[in-house]
Every structure is written in structure tokens, then in C-alpha cells.
Image (cartoon, rainbow, N blue to C red; front, side, top):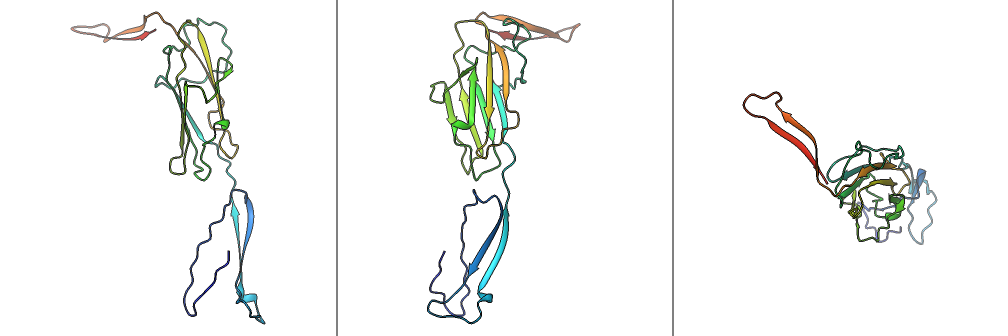
Length: 211
């Protein structure tokens, strides 16, 4: 940068913004002052050198996945029984909300190529009408993905796979993520628990309705 018209006996303040994205590591900044058309016999006092270090982004973002507003634990084991009752049940049109939070606000996650989303080993394109992507910004460090697949038509087990990186190439904490879940069209009551039990004057029946 070049500054001109410096008034005598007047302090000068200026701000120089440097893009440090490609400056990871040690750097040296050199500032040199001179008057046009004049040669000074001693120029050492006209030069200022400062060294600074730019730290690399080595920390991955945080990942949170909610399926029908529940956090289902990851399961990387293969499915051996598609009708296994131990697998969690979700609705036939589940609401899958993915939140990615990265502390690096200088390079917000706004690129869908950094996210791999698969259902039953099929890559889900972000151009699909079932996917909505809200990119992160400098003001908001959270990127959100809303995925609402239509799983009606067949009672079976599905597998969701997710892998996420940030703009610096760091994989998210909790990535890769994989979970198996079942869908069922018929209504059934499961896990009915009366409380208190035994009862004296009243009891409450808590149960889960699936289907």
C-alpha cells in the first residue's frame, strides 16, 4: 500500500487488512517510508520489520444429528435382521436435522461438497427436493441441513450415513456417522409401563406408539 500527502507534525494512522488464508506459518511484514524525489543518507530508521505467525485451522467442526427430534446413537455394525425389534423406529417421513458448527468464522461452511449424505448406500444430492441446506456465514457459524425422506410404502430397516469436513479439510467431531432405523406403517403400542406399580388409588400408563 502507498500513502501520500502526510502533513508535517501530524500523527498518521492507517489500517491495512491482509488476507491470511494462504499465509499459514511464519511471516514477515516490512514497512518502508521515503519522500519522493529525496534521497536520505540514512534510511535505517525509515524501515520497520515485524514478524507474525498465522496458525493453521486444525480443529474440526462439531456435528449434531436429530432424527424426529431425537439423538440416535451411531451404529457401525452391519444389519443382520431387517426386522430386529431392538432397532429404533422413526416415522415414515422422518425429519432429519443436521447442525454443523465451526469456530473458524473466517472460512464458514457454505459448500455442500464438504458434506456426504447417503441413505441406504445411495448418495443424496443437495439438489433433491427432500434436502434443504442453510450455509454458515461469518455472522452465524452454524450450517444446517434438513432432510425429509419419504420412507413409506415398505416396512423395513434403513441406514443413514453422514460425513462432514470443514473448509480447512478437518473432519467433524462425530464424523463419520451411521445409524440404522426401522419404519412401520401399522400402529402398535410398545413399552407400556404403569407407575406406580403396585398401585393404591391411581397409576399412570406410559407407552410408546410406533407406526
